[in-house]
Image 1: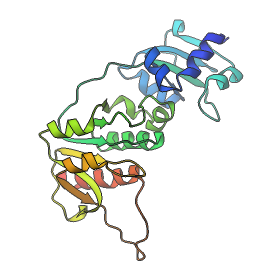
Image 2: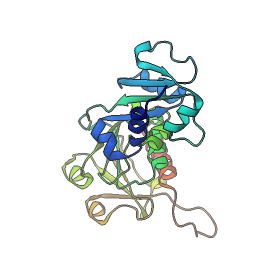
Image 3: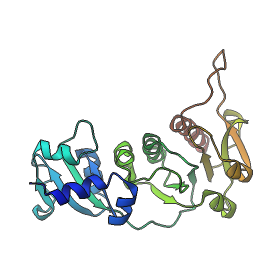
Image 4: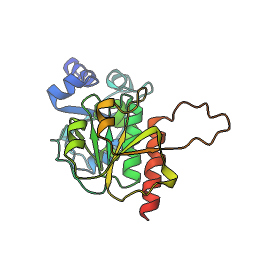
Length: 243
């Protein structure tokens, strides 16, 4: 049976300040939890309605009812399991290959999808601005579908990072060079901007290579692409040329 303190703790982890305070986050669903269990993330405790994850020590498992799970879940329709994990120490930025830099991405679904894309295309490093949504937000964790375990995410001052990196920096702009006609390297930093405002003026000044995904529609009236969709197209083109 769940105690009031357990319910209070787990529900508080939906907020960034309590995740930071407790150094804990939670994940839901068999696939995501299994990916985390198979990684270097350390399990704090597991709450299940059915007998799943036989490899986990019984000391770290509590069996709960569906009604109890609903009280702690962040999902509209809860799964059959929820796990608490410790937030690991941030690792240093790896300056190898392609790096995605995120300038103020606010939507959890977008960040989660971008991490899945990075995992798919073999991008091992994502650099996020302090304003970008927290990677341990339950909606982000859910949207990554386990890719959170394979992509190193670092929060820092993106402008400062770009100023110091020795890698070429590419930014996505509406007036940039057609990406399908550009010579793209196998190493570099690709900056993706905020959903509503794009790349901030401060970072735009530091971006030496401006690229764009051309519009092919007859009317040319679509304002912009979703940032995760744009990331998919850009990574696909960089990797295609790399091959």
